[in-house]
Length: 322
Image (cartoon, rainbow, N blue to C red; front, side, top):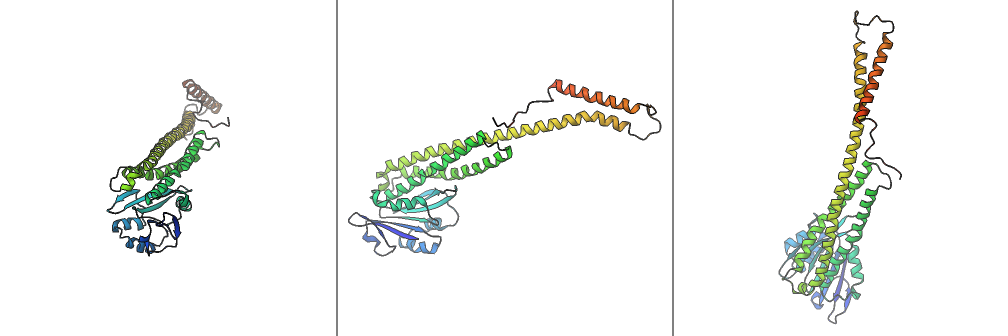
């Protein structure tokens, strides 16, 4: 889908049918390209004579790292919008004082909202549109970040009484989302820093306070994501400690049972040998004597283990409805 918003000589914003003819007749234009066909965007990029490296980064199917490149007459940016399913959608932007061109392969909600409200947004220059785009994209990260915080708190409280395995599976899914967002937030932080400190575009310096505000939002978002990463790491360590403790308790119980039966197995094996002459082999009540000895051995070992505190130990972790 191609669409074009222009500011005519009278200073009014007007939505026009997409065309490469007479673009110089307007004060500035915003051309939004939403298409997976790269050939359709190539004509527009050739018209503005964009650098081949910028065009390659824009049309490359491999997701680029968020960045900003300054060329002689324009600026090229790569940012990412966060969708409802925590997936990222790449947004490529070419901008100078005469145009702003946005390219994305799939629909992005933030662009549609700004496009529909452009006439009421007091956008005087393409830099104003750029600020609104970046600000809107960054603001949409916060609801998703708060959702992650609520999910982490729910995993910590475990009100649904999930097992350790289920908790670990949910936690690893959340950590994947956290790291996915973090890989975008950190370079976008650097991107805004370069924009706010550049001297190559005078329009940027005139709007520096607006971009500084977005930079502050990114700093806060970065601190939140870093905190979630540390919190999830602590939860993971706690779950692993609980799982390891439960396993140790199980192994200890099995070891105690095995140890109790070791002398019993020895006595049974000793008198189970098929020799003709063995001590006490001819005793009439020998079987009962052996059983009594085996019983006394088992009771003595149970008393010994209980005295050591190895038997009937309270479990370190017990899920309770309370």
